[in-house]
Image (tube, rainbow, N blue to C red; front, side, top):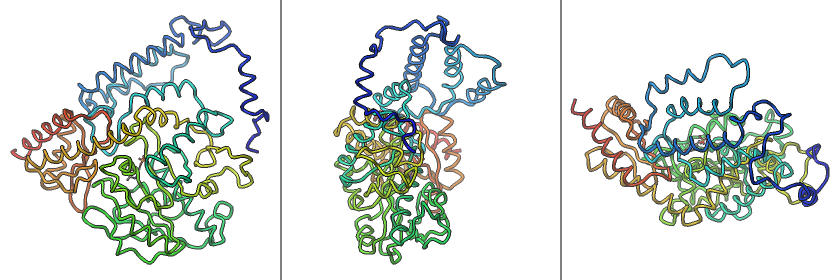
Length: 496
Ligand SMILES: *Cc1c(COP(=O)(O)O)cnc(C)c1O
């Protein structure tokens, strides 16, 4: 059923057929007169349109360092100009892009610049951005290899590189998904499938009603997206066993409940507030003895493994059974992009394959057998470009630089007399400006000031401002300018 569209030709045969066709013209082609009007008009030729888009994108990037990081309220109000009734007829595509840029660009949050520290967002590496444009022109569907040999091959190559550079088991498989929420979902779906099948129950065929019970263990500082994944999987966000954590949000291994072979233990490589890592060595050892499954939420912290100075934080994590990470965060590829790695690819495949009847006819890795989606954009393109352009040392340097810049930010705030609430081990900093109301007011004023952007969070009963340094573009100068602005705004507010 899978290959209903497939004529049975091998890729090589197809390539042979293709080779007889004229090669791709190097010069712009005049649009044939029978195509739609949009393409026949001189002003809207594809070349002009794409050049216009490229020119505008370059101008946007050039303007980011000087502009306010948050959009100005008047620019956000102008977004109405993009609405109104749907036009009755077609518009000139160039005019459409012009309108989108003129009205849309000023209303963006300048998170690709060096002074956005909100949530954990990351920017876009030059090669990844350019690759995403090319991928847009390709418009490949990576659901099946036959739909896009290049998109499917890039996933395999990227998986190979990442297993190596992160230090995950050489046999593990992966699904390329939208982000860490879906990567958590996919890893946990594989866990659910593996543990229930071992107990004699096939959840993909039989569903969950009447299934043997699974226990899910999480730390008290579990990320909300992991709980959402549990909710979507029928495992329930409230029927988890919560384990107490220490002052950095790390699970206390000695407080783990008794584990068994129907237990999924969810641990974190990188708490979203503190950047702290759970004690994976102890937890994975206990889980292995009991036959429990360990799932790692490594949305951004997984990347610590690629930087020699941070690698120790990841100790023990490679012994887990599944790992979720984001690539749009710290790998600095465009949104959206995340990966679910699973130690035994078969566990992910049985949870995600389109049909149980489908068995792989060959060794070809069919991408959609590893993801919730069938049709999907070719995320491997940007991942490949990012990794190929950075190389091993460039990747390590990007991660390490952001960690050092986070430390620089924290030290500057501490010297100015503000309280840092976490041990800055990675790229996350929590700072308090006093009581909750004062801290909230100062955060709002920092966002309005526009020099940089930081958000608020609650950390173990304290209201704090969270700083995440996760963009490749951030420099020491960005940190120093942001630090000066934060101190100026905070001091002015506390003196009032
Ligand atoms: C960001 C984050 C997530 C969710 O990632 P999305 O890309 O937003 O789906 C999950 N866990 C942690 C620790 C995160 O930082």
